[in-house]
Every structure is written in structure tokens, then in C-alpha cells.
Length: 638
Image (cartoon, rainbow, N blue to C red; front, side, top):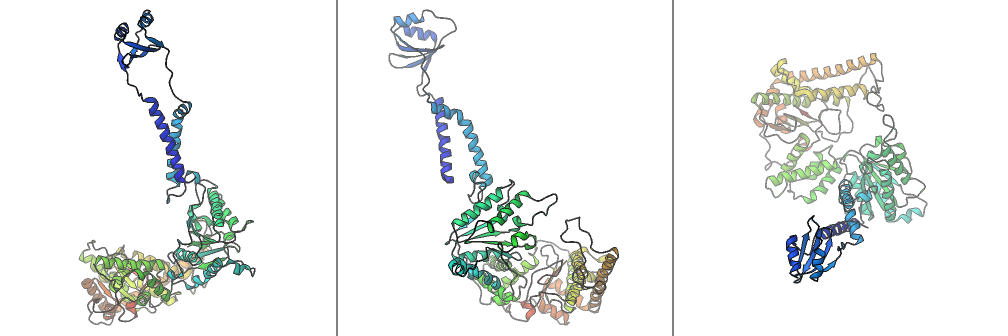
């Protein structure tokens, strides 16, 4: 019986009970109330036809058919019966209530039925709110959403930038289309495929594309949907999900964020999480147990494969692991073309140019870039999206939205201009440093100003010279403040710069083996230990040397940045003036300033194509403030 039928029966029972109650409390024959004196007079006058006595209550009817009710007084009337008989009044006994047995049972059970109805209502609200699924009778049922063969419209044509991952899963599609082809030769397709990689790279989209290409049912569920507060519910849901999948075989089960239920067991203090571990145990049995699961392929996605239980990753369960990484320049171009299909574009928009300007962007970031550009065009009442909107969208994503309502004094703006100019000059002069793309003193996000460095190519590894240049440029802002305002004029705007530089110097010494005194060894806490339990894996003397090496690297970079700015004070003043005048300067204007030429005016988008000029204008990256180097260059905050 489905939920609609259950609801219909429930409300029908409630309606019958209410009808019976109202029936019993209603009186269909209205009666006139007479005094005892009036009743006696009517009897003596011969107007009463029939009476029946129920204790002190006398009910009767007159000759003309009218009904009446009389209440006898406490004083006994011994002559009443004689008067009734003398006047030919028919006397009958008390009339019993005409109530059937089933009505009495319904009335008696009404409070219980009402309580059950309220309980079912609240249970449905707690357990069945997601899309109308579930309910009090299906608490331990699977919450997996089933998409039929014709409901999954996504194909490999909608997935771009992950060619290697698509090749890995292409075999699954061929197996689901023709299982006998593989079974004839004794081959077995992998029972499980684990997709791992950074957020937003298209793991879920790729799983949908597999189902869309193979034209098979697709069960979708999140790892957190299995675990409840009651022990055993998650395991029951796993069993139910696989039972449903076997009926739809061949099919695909997609478990998103499997690390919510698949973490390695025995990792907590004083024991594990019983409900989560039972759920994981049931999942292990269903994927590779005594019962076969032919035709059911489990695809899981996670951003943290390192925390998964080893039993989950062994052959026979998740046989194949597919890494879905950040796209390269060609992949970004393909992804942009996919998302640009629904957007009316100006003829000057080139996906290849945008791809070169967005290293480090994931597929989700590129989709957001296209959407933000379309929103900028809509706010400007434009019919087409141009490169100007894409540039604005990229700045918003990498540096944050402009805080136009924020009011800054001239003194504070001047200090910010010096700070950002210091970053730009040192970054421009350091060898192997990423080119300066844009410098602005317009507040964006949490920063009062931003200096954006954009690499010309995708970076996958970093040299010692590059990292030292990053540390030096991080201190350029603080040094510029000190040069122009003295020691007392230094602000707290370099907080994130100092943190960023210190973390990189510490990683050089402790992780990357870039210290000659300490050599290529790893110094650090045991990463497998619990917080507060792991300690340094080195002696106190080594700790002292580590501190000295970190300080030496930072001091050398600081002195290098200070030397560069002292030798280019005139450029520092000129760049400060340009920022005060234009608020934002691009790479071409920075080059004019560094060559001590007159600064050209800001770019006019209608006269100068975005893809004109050299690679410095055409490249871009994600903002990376603080922490270790990642794919893409940083944007310095003030």
C-alpha cells in the first residue's frame, strides 16, 4: 500500500469517528419543556396521548403529535398513575439508547486514533521530508533516488577536461551495454569505481554520464543518508538499496561523499562509531560477499580517499580508482565551450584566451565564471556577453567582489597604494616570479587592496628560486610602508603576507628538503597521531636548527625585497600616484611604470580586444592567499 492509500484510509477512519460522535451528541427531535403543573393539567384535559418514564424524566406526546419533556419534583405524586389511566394515556417504560456496538467501539477508541494520527504526522515530517520519500513505515528503507533509463540525459559530450578519466570508465559503459561480450571470455568488470579529486572537478557529472551513455537505471545517494542515530538503520538501508538495485540489474549505484560512511574503522577514542561501522561492514559484504552482485556497479566519489578503510579499497570491491584532477589549458577550453552553449556571446569572446587566463580553475569554477559574466551583462542591459564581462567575473572570483560602499580616507588609500606597489615591484623584479597582472586599491572581499600575479603556464612543481621570490614579494608591502612612513607607520595589513611567507619558509625546511643544514629529511609531527598525542619526531637541538633556518630564509628574502625597493624608490612613488589616480592598473601600465615611461590610460574595452597584447594580459589564475604554493599564483592582500 503506497503512502497515498495509507493517508486516505487514515483520514477516512477519523471522519467516521467524528461523524459518530456528532451523531450521538446531536438530538434530531426537538422537545418542549413543560412544568409539572402544566403536564398534570394537560393530562386531566385529555390532551396527552402517550408518556414514558425514565426516573424523574417524563417524555411524551400530545394528541396533535407535539413532543414534550417534564421533570418530576422530589415530592411523590401517588395520583399520577390514576390520572393517566383515567384519561386513557398510554404508559410505556424508559426508551433505550439506539447505539450500535461498532459506534460504541469507535467512540471509545477516538482518543487513541487521534494520538496515532498525530504521531504519524510528526514521524512523516521527521523522516519523509526529502521529496516525499520515506515515512514512518519506511524508516529503514533506502533513500537512494532512482533515475530511469530515459531520465538521465547527461552524456560524455557534456563532460570535458577529464579525458583520462573518461577513458578509464569507458569500459564500464561497454560492459553495461553488452555484458555477454566480457563474460564469454571469463572477464569480470570492476564491481566498484572510486572517483577522487579536488572539489568541483566533475566526479558526479562523470558518473551521470556513464549511466546516460549506457542507458541503465541510476541510483543516487549520499554517504550521509545511511547513518542515523539508531544503530542498525544504516546497514538495513544498504541491504535495501542493493536489493532494489539487483531488481533493476544491470544498473549503477552512485554514492557521493562516501567518506561519510567509509572512514577506516577503529579510529576514534575509546572505540568506534557503532552505527557507521555497521553500515560500512554491510557495504563491504554487499559489494563482495557470498551473494553475487552481477550487473550492479558501484561508483563512489570523495575528496579524501586517504581516510577510507583499506577493506573498501581492496580488489573485489573498489577495484578501480580514477583520479579526476584539475583540467589543463586544453581541458579548460573544452569545459568553457560546454558552458558557453547556453550564453549569447559576442564575437570577440574566445574560449582559448579565457582558458589561458584561468590556470588552477576547476570545472565548477569555470561554470561559475560563465554564469557571473552573464549576470554582469544582464545588469548592464546588454544582449551579448563580451570579454569585458568575463574579465570582471574573473576578478570577482579571484579577488572578491568590490566593496564600493566602503569609505576610506585619503591617508589610508595612500598607505594601501604604497603597500600594493611594494608587492608589485618586488614580484616584477624577482626571477621566475609569476607576472604581475593587476594591482588595485579598491577593497575586495576582506582585503583593502590586491596585487594579482598570474602565471603564464600551468605550474605543477615549484623551484627553490620561485619560492624564495614568493617570500620576498610577500614582504614587499610591509617594507614599502616602512620606507614611506617609518617604523611607526607600519600597519597590520601585512598579517596574511607574514603568515604566507612564514608557512612557505617552514615547508622549505621541514617538508621540501630545501635547507642545506638539515638536508632532504622530513621533520614534523606524526600525521597519523590524534590531536594532542603526536609530538615532534626530532630532538630539541634539531628544533633549534629548524627555527634558525626558517629565520635565515625569511631574513634573506626580506633583505632582498628591501634592496629592490630602495633601488626603485622613484618607481614606488610613480606607481603609488598611478594607483591614487586610476585605483586599478593592469599589466601594461605596470610595465610602463617599471620602464619609467609615462603611464598609458586604462584599457578601453571597445577599442582594444582582450586577446590583444602579450601573454601577461591573457593569463590568469585563482587567488591563493597564505599557505603553501598551489596550482596558480597568489594575490597579495592588504
